[in-house]
Structures are given as C-alpha cells and as structure tokens.
Amino acid sequence: MFVTVTFAKVFHSQEVLDILKNIPDMTWTPAIPNEFDVVLQSNNNRATQDSPSRTANKVRYVGPTPAEFSWLHSESTCMTVKNQVACGSSWAFSAVGSLSDNLCINGNKQKVEYSEQFQISCDTANNGCNAESNYMEKSMWFLNKLGVPTEQCVSYKSGSNSLRGKCPFQCDDGTKLALVKSKSYENVCLGEESIMNALKFGTLQASVTVYTDLAFYKSGIYQHKYGKVEGHQFLVIVGYGSEDGVNYWIVRNSWGTSWGENGYLRILRGQNECGIEQECYLQKV
Picture (tube, rainbow, N blue to C red):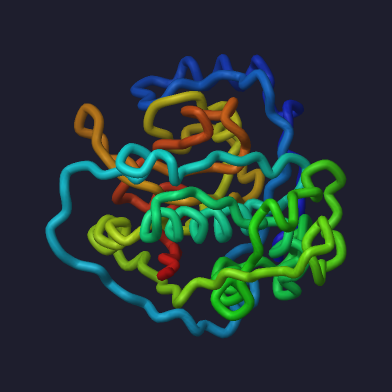
C-alpha cells in the first residue's frame, strides 16, 4: 500500500551530508539544496501489495541505438520541469508530463502544458495527493480512455493545500473542457535495449524507490549509497548516455529546478538502480 509522507528539509542534515561526502568512489555529488519541500509516495510493502488487472501490452523494442540520446537536447522546448510541492502527486506529473512531451515531440513542436490537477481530481483509481493505491498503469489507462485538458484550462492547486479537490466539469474560467487522450500505451521495460529503443518515440513514465540519499543529489550519476527507504517517486525518462565508462539514464523529476541538475537526475543504467528499469510506459499520441 502507498501512503504519503513529507520529504522536506528535515531529512537534510549536515551529518548525513558528511557521511556521503566521505564515501569512496562516488559517481555523484551530494549537497543540501536551497529549496526543498515536496511530498512523495511511500511504499513500505511493495512486494505484497495487490496488483491491478494488467491490460498494457508488453512490447520489447529492439535495434541499434546511438551511444547517447536525449530529448532534453534534441527537443529542449518540449521539456518542462515542474514542482509538485506539498502533494504526493508525482504519479500525475510523470503521466501527464510524458503525454505533454510526446504530443510536442510528435506534433508541431509547440509545447502545450496539460493539467496534472485534472488527473489528481478526477482519476478515481488513484487517490489524489495520498496515492494510497497508485499504479502507473492506472494513470496510463485514465489518459488513454478519458484524457486531460490543458493546464490553462484547469490549473494546479493541490500543491499549496495537499487536497485532491473536486473533479471539474468545466475550465477554471467557466468555459467547456476539451480533453486530449493518448492513442495507446505500452509497457516497454523489457531490458535496457528495449528502453533505449522506445525512447526514439518519446519520453517514458517510470518510477524509483527513494532512499534518504536521493534528497541530497546535486549532480553526477546517482547510485544509492546511504540511508533507508523514504518512499517512492514517479519520474520521466528522457534519454541516456555515458560518462567515464558509467552508463546512465536522464530522468526528469517534479521537485522543481533547484533540485539536482536543473530538476533532472542522471541515474545508473543497466542495473535496475532503485527499480528504474522495473516498469515504464510509452504513450503513443
């Protein structure tokens, strides 16, 4: 079961920072960020939680891939870092964010922001800011069957009050809702090669188990080194690369631009670090 916990500056102690700075052979740089106040999903018993009915096609993508690739570089105007703030809504930010990316990448290259708030308020299969029974596939199903309006239509409100809010039947200004859907979605986490090839078609929704040290991530290629499980975070894989012989995924978070590498994380690739390669979805648009 997923429950919600606050993951804020209380976790940032000089003691932990000193421990991280003294770990040998670190591939990433730890620091205490200037601003950090978010909520994430905590999964204290992931192995025994009930699984939803699985409907997504599992598709293995194969073929040659370049040594490095990133939508952050090739379609930078399509990439946007947001901040979920005081709401455990990373599941919605990763799902809606990936849909927004792929509509931009595969459309007219003009970025349109879509509404995380609408999914938080209307997706009854998930539990808003509390996310007690969240699964990525449920959020994919919602965006495929119902869809979302633009952020201009329904703006983000839960970040300031941690409330789910009522599902709106019209835009904030009283105009009619216009919903955009994905055409389909696929579970493409069937090995490193499959994920790399799937990225040719757009960004992917994924997730990681969050340990204490992730809150201290500043730059470099993250590998879990210290601390206990603090929760679970849903993310967007946007690319991959290598540095000094270490392979990594490029991942967008929803903790704002002051965290990590301007809101992004590079995490070890090919070893399912923190569960990053366990389950991920490509939304076709």
